[in-house]
Amino acid sequence: MALQAASLVPASFSIPKEGKGSVSLRDSTLFGLSLSDSFKADFSSSALRCKREFQQSIGVVRAETAATATPAVSKSAPEGKKTLRKGNVVVTGASSGLGLATAKALAETGKWHVIMACRDFLKAARAAKSAGMSKENYSIMHLDLASLDSVRQFVDNLRRSEMPLDVLVCNAAVYLPTAKEPRFTAEGFELSVGTNHLGHFLLARLLMDDLTKSDYPSKRLIIVGSITGNTNTLAGNVPPKANLGDLRGLAGGLNGLNSSAMIDGGDFDGAKAYKDSKVCNMLTMQEFHRRYHEETGITFASLYPGCIATTGLFREHIPLFRTLFPPFQKYITKGYVSEDEAGKRLAQVVSDPSLTKSGVYWSWNKASASFENQLSQEASDVEKARKVWEISEKLVGLA
Ligand code: NDP
Ligand code: PMR
Image (tube, rainbow, N blue to C red):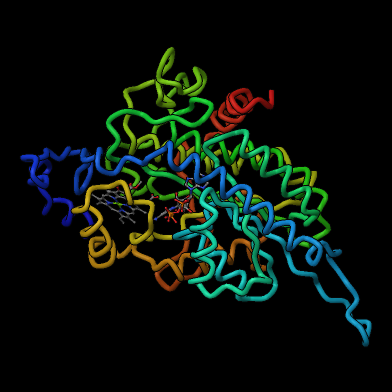
């Protein structure tokens, strides 16, 4: 079915760009790429905004800490029955899409305090409000994964809040399919791998101590993966395919100067960089499992939540793609899932007592039942996982 759909779409075609002649669309994706300039972010203004919001976010955290730092099991008077305290879960990128829907689903249970770790404080505050989340169920803390200083600052702030950390969800991501030139993080790593993988790698490594210390009965570290990084699927075979190669670009620092901006050392391709970053996410989860599961009891997991075709992830794609992608996924591939449903899925991985197995990549079938899915050869390559881990340690200053 999906392949038939692919054949309906011309491999290469042109559409008129508003007032600027025509724009050629590449044959490497379904709806094409290559419109970029009008979508480029204004980094200077967002840097100022982040700084301002950072100050505000600290205020919110401080205001809410005292009430949540309680032991995992507390006595509830008067019967003396033992009840589980609220779990504290950090969700990165909780200001939209999957992260917001997950935060909402967890907050609604009344059993979780969600720490929304976001780069845009006001956006997160508005999002939480419009999702109807009650104030006692969440805090917002500033985190910009495209800056390792910000990651370290976030960890310090979280510790200062004295909230125990029970679950960490590495969810935030950027996808830059129309970028012609690479963009870079504060430390000069290509932006998609720098944000989606390296920022989360440092965050998760630093927070391992905190997770280990938590007295919560089921501690978990979840890194969101995707089908598009798995070349054992139809979706993962849509060009450009994920491929980390021999990791020469990653080892060179992904800076686009004395090394390639791409992990495999090739020419820059934003869509491939995203898919490569998802392979790193899935490899990292497994490497965490091998190194720490037995010793700490922490459950490490990854997942493909379904194709949430309406999220902000596609904000930099061309308008035609954003119009056609949701119906394509709904009616042709049938891989579509709503933000609410995807949020419930990730919330299950956070809290469902039946999903405690570690080292698993979860997916859901058509009846929305979870199952352990198979990763592609590359995304389950033990040696590659070890190398990605070791190189990443050096890049983020841990080794
Ligand atoms: P969204 O764009 O809606 O959400 C991404 C979130 O990441 C936003 O909150 C965004 O913040 C945040 N973010 C981006 N850059 C940074 C940064 N530098 N620091 C902190 N936060 C940042 O996309 P989705 O909800 O779709 O994506 C969520 C996850 O789901 C990703 O890991 C993605 O790979 C995965 N996924 C998505 C699928 C889909 O079909 N949509 C399918 C499979 C996996 P802001 O709001 O400020 O932009
Ligand atoms: Mg894909 C069962 C088929 C299936 C599924 C589940 C997805 C999910 N996609 C499928 C098939 C196809 N897609 C086919 C046959 C085509 C070519 C016609 C196709 C194309 C396509 C494009 C151009 N698909 C895309 C793009 C994107 O830009 C998205 C992407 O790769 O983002 C990285 C995307 C996606 N398809 C998916 C999912 C889940 C995505 C996006 C999100 C992600 O992986 O994070």
